[in-house]
Length: 149
Ligand code: RB5
Image 1 (tube, rainbow, N blue to C red):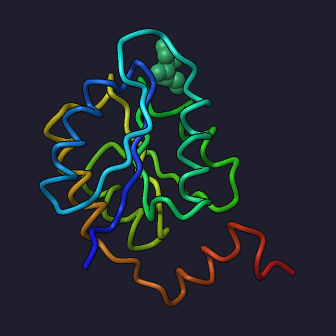
Image 2: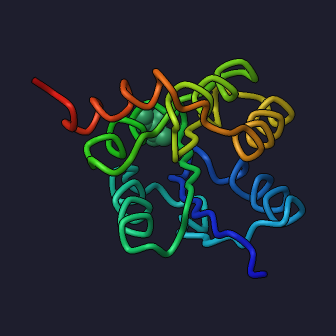
């Protein structure tokens, strides 16, 4: 059975966190599609949100991780795509709830706002937690315009 694929991308504010999380994702058995950025040079976070959204849309990855300095800009950019449910998470509770209730397909964190061990914990929870469905499925369907009156 082939490993599931997760795409990861960041700007210069998330580069150290990306390097850390790529290793954890591989250890968790995921195939990692690393979309950059790859160095410390200043880049524009929307460009990397677009790359990741395209990878999800094209079926190259089932889930995603996005990182910038705060996680704010890159989550705003990612959520402009209808097929993306990007959750900016700061703790384990948020990581669990964004899967159980929101069926988030992209985890977003801030490389300058979240410590490395908290980020690793959030990633593991995001990966391992299932969507609860039920009443949450109705609400999630309304996020993309389906089921609206
Ligand atoms: C880049 O300096 C910074 O603005 C970016 O990483 C992010 O925090 C934006 O929301």
